[in-house]
Amino acid sequence: MAKRFVGRWSVYALGTFGLLLVTLVGSLAPHAAAEPRTSADRVRRWLARRALDGIGAIGWCVDRLPPAIGPGRAPKLTGNRINTRPV
Image 1 (cartoon, rainbow, N blue to C red):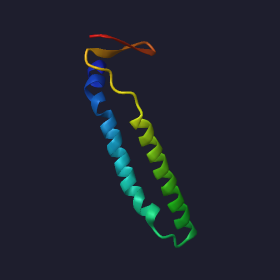
Image 2 (image 1 turned 180 degrees about the horizontal axis):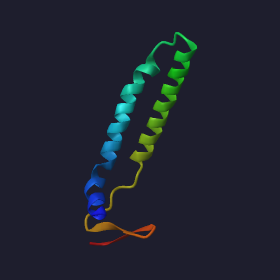
Image 3 (image 1 turned 30 degrees about the horizontal axis):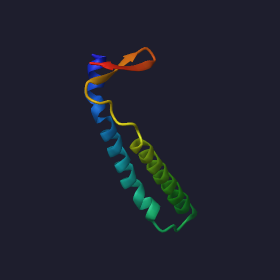
Image 4 (image 1 turned 90 degrees about the horizontal axis):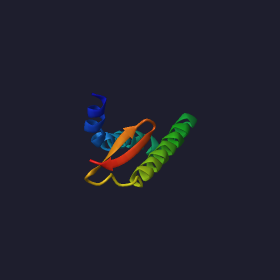
């Protein structure tokens, strides 16, 4: 059962992660662009901007992931290693 779950839902993992990041950007943007009136607003603005920088760094790293394994080869989980073998 575990193998089927991983195989079936792993296709959507990066898409779901991307939607989470878009939601975070949407919720942080008003705080990052707001005009600070108090010191708490300045701290909130600074934290929102650093969080947006972190989200950008995560997106940059995800964009540089190696491409998926081509057709005819599937990853096989064996112990602590992933081996690729013809299907």
